[in-house]
Every structure is written in C-alpha cells, then in structure tokens.
Length: 232
Ligand code: GLN
Image 1 (cartoon, rainbow, N blue to C red):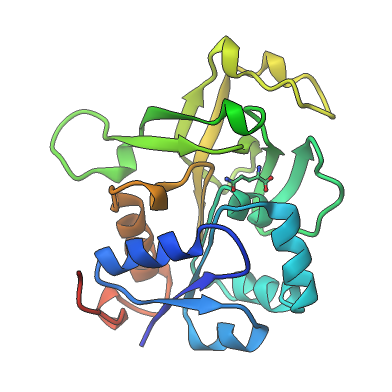
Image 2: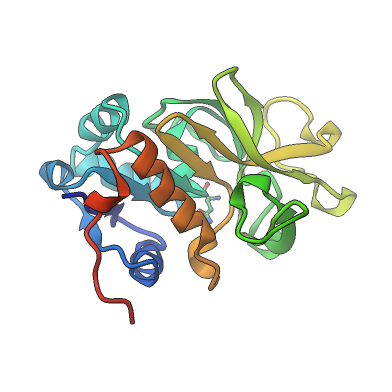
C-alpha cells in the first residue's frame, strides 16, 4: 500500500494534499523522521527553503530524507522543494542552508527576483501530454522562484523557460546570470522530480498525475498500489 507523503513543515503542503485528493490519492503530512516509514513517496512543497531547512534540522529530518532519496523512492520537490533536492544551490541569501541533495543540478535561488517579480507564464512540457498533437503547455506559477542553471547527464529536462529581459535576475552572488537566456524549470532524474513553479496552486492536476505515473514506474510496484480515496 502506497501513500504519498507531503513534507508539512512549512509552505504549500495543504494545497498539495488537496491536489492529490483531486487525483484520487491520499496525501499524508510528514513532520517527523519516523513518519517517512509509512509512505512510499514524498512531495516537498514550495515555501521558504531557509525556514524549511531550519525546521527540518530541528526535527532531525535530514538523515531520513537523504536515506529516502537514496533508497530510490519517488520524491517531487516544488520550488523551495526543488532547492532542497538540488546538489548545489547558488544565488541571493543561499547562506549555506542544508540541502537534501541527490538531484544532479545547480539551482539558483530567487532567480527571477523578489516577491513582486513573481509571475505566471504558459510553458511547454511535451511529457505532460493529455491532448493529441503539439507540445502540451501548462500555466506555470512562479513565486520567488528558483531556476535550474546546470544539469548533469542523468537529468532529463521536462520544461524550460526563455527569460525575457525584465525577468533576468539581479540577485546573483556567483556569476552573472543576466547573460542566462534560457533556464530549466522542470526536471526528472530517475526517482526525482523537481519543478520551479507551483502546480498545486492551479486547478491543473497533470503534474500530480505525472508524479503518480512516476511512482508507478519507479516506486513501490504499480499504480494499483496507490490508495484511492473518494474525490470531492
Ligand atoms: N525563494 C524561495 C526560497 O528560496 C522559494 C520560493 C517558493 O517556494 N515559492 O526558499
């Protein structure tokens, strides 16, 4: 029996649980290391990664989270969750926060700037198909969003974003990101999925469905093992 855990320290965990419910799956709030033993997959929500890291440290969650990733269990990080999963984080106020790591990429925190530079954009994601023909697009909600600047050879790019001049970051500490014209905003590496945007804040559940498909591929056997709950 597989339940989808949702790290519930801070950020948009309720919205992820609601989105999981809409696709017929039960999300389980995770706050303590031992609770990870009850789930076969995990979503790390968006929020504020420094705060989330401090809370994770306080609850002694990092060793269990790293073990969870190493065991090959499916983990999806959205926004701050993406930062958590990255092997390397750069950019403003990165401040040496602890990361889970495992995802072979360099992520730039707050790449697009501060809260007021948050934005929405239609983005192509061919893997996210549900209709026939043409590349599928989704509405990306970017809130103080990070961007992925580099990926390793094992990482599959699922979506990228062409940066317009008004969205180029002025917050770089390392290197001049104003020269970056194309950034990566969704990736998969085996059991890991990471998105710089917030699908849980939209009515579109295709990214949640994509994660469930991943669980079916790499997780505990098959989709049939996911606990279905009544949709509302
Ligand atoms: N910029 C935030 C951070 O660094 C992430 C923003 C988000 O999760 N919406 O933690």
